Image 1 (cartoon, rainbow, N blue to C red):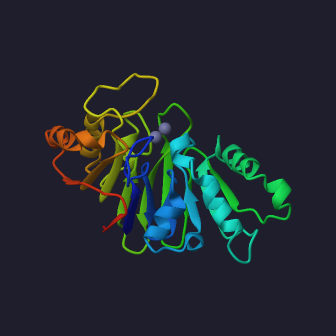
Image 2 (cartoon, rainbow, N blue to C red):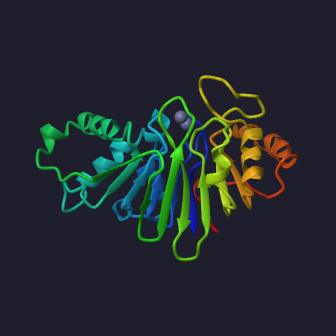
Amino acid sequence: MKITFLGTDTCIPSRGNDTASYLINDELLVDVGWNVTGNLRNLGIDVTSVRHLLFTHMHHDHIISFPSLIFHWTQTPPGRDVSPLTIYGPNETLERAFDGVLAFLQADRFWPNLKRPTLVPLAEQDTFETETLSVTCIPSDHAVPGRCYRIVDKRDGTVLGMSGDTAYGPTLAPIFKDCDLLIHEFSGGLGNVRGLPSKHSSAIDAATVASEAGAKRLAIVHGPLSAREKCLAAVAEIYNGELLRPEPLMSIEL
Ligand SMILES: [Zn+2]
Ligand SMILES: [Zn+2]
């Protein structure tokens, strides 16, 4: 499985980075951050060659460049045709978010004959497949409806676990069981954020989940990156697997 980190940062990313977002096997985008089209083009990837878009949840920093992605599609020959794109996300909020994009772009005024993408609202324990991937979800424990994902490469069985934004909970380790890589948020840094209404994880929560799941590797993202080394030192006290330090636009092969 090929994983490209489009961004690794928090809500407002530092220069040269983007909010946590990824491209898997060059075919599945996960969240879009602030600059999805620029990120893909900086990697030499044709934006409309990516036909699957998956959202962890609909907080602004995870969807903020959703309109520019759809606009790019409408301006690409043959034009006004977004039908090759399939978009997956929590069933509670996916359609509302997409309707918001169309409203922002004034699609009814400019492109009354727009060919729409396929929307696939994901129920709490749904599964879907792309050409190379099989994806299963569970609900996250976050301030808005969200999903955590187990993504399996059908060609070789490699497994990626993806927390999205979530508070720590006992349902996380089972879905990430024995994964080759767990990408987990650490918004709380070294603080204790359990029970807070924002419903995020700390670095210790990420390490606990990785350890409980038996994850082979762990990448902590979407947290205070300036304190990452300090956080990783604390993580290493709890979790024995390999720690990755992803940088923006870096690709790894599992
Ligand atoms: Zn969030
Ligand atoms: Zn977030």
